[in-house]
Image (cartoon, rainbow, N blue to C red; front, top):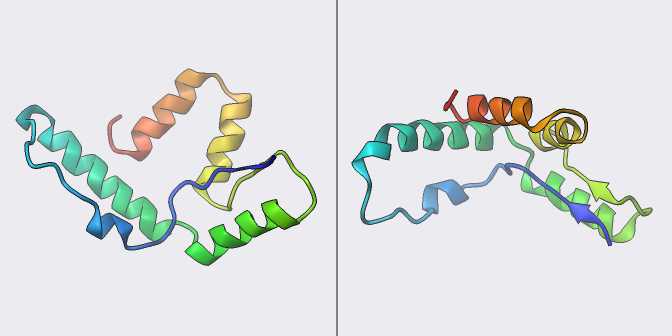
Length: 99
C-alpha cells in the first residue's frame, strides 16, 4: 500500500464549492482571510496532471511508502516528520493568514 498526499491542486473546484446558507458573523473576517489564502495556494499548486502522474507512479512504479506531489505538500510532509507540532501549526496558521 502507498500513501499519496497531495496538498492543493490547481483546479477550478474552489469556484464551485458550496457555501453555507447561515454564516456566523464572528467568523466572517477569518473566513475571508482563509478563503483568499486557499485561492492563492490553489493558483500556485501543481497541475492535476502532475498530481495524477504521482498517483500513477505510486500505483505502478517502484514501491515507496509515501509519495507527495511537488510543492507545499512535500515541504509540509517533511516538516511533520522532523519538527515538533507547535512550529508546524504556526506555519500552517501563517499560510492561511491566521497568525
